[in-house]
Image (cartoon, rainbow, N blue to C red; front, side, top):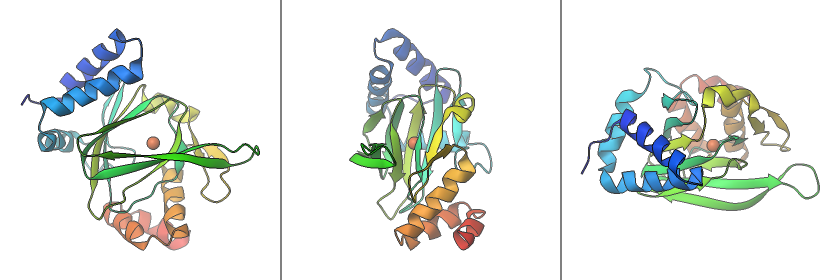
Length: 214
Ligand SMILES: [Fe+2]
């Protein structure tokens, strides 16, 4: 088994993306090779140590550059997110547990969104999402989902290009992490998902106000 480092991964992934004709596929294949070459729990340990202290949702970024953002996603048990886009391709590299993406597209009737399909990533698997994807994520299990999310661009620079869709009515709005959190709470409330709400407050105590007020 090789030793995983964030700098080594970022360098290798960028080189692979620049070599291939298809950057998404090149990144996905590089991630799959990374999973074969490393112990998954050892990757988790490296990502854990690299997190900024006190990092909240959306702040779990362990590497950001013009071509690549790496985010360590620690999704609480039963958590369900609001609907959002990225504007660049993404790959979900599952390290522990399971993450389900529900994919949407604009409704034919012209307003709102329709679900097209779901994609599930399990430990040791990589799911790729195209740049125009609209999705929400869910942890269907009772334990944490841990994954490395990579995005084919600089998340910070993309922020004002991204959108969020309301849980009720699917109205498109400007993206920010606080609103994503609010829409996630609304989604879990709508679904009567108390376990997800409790796990969210445990992970992010400041979300308690949202859970009580929304
Ligand atoms: Fe996403």
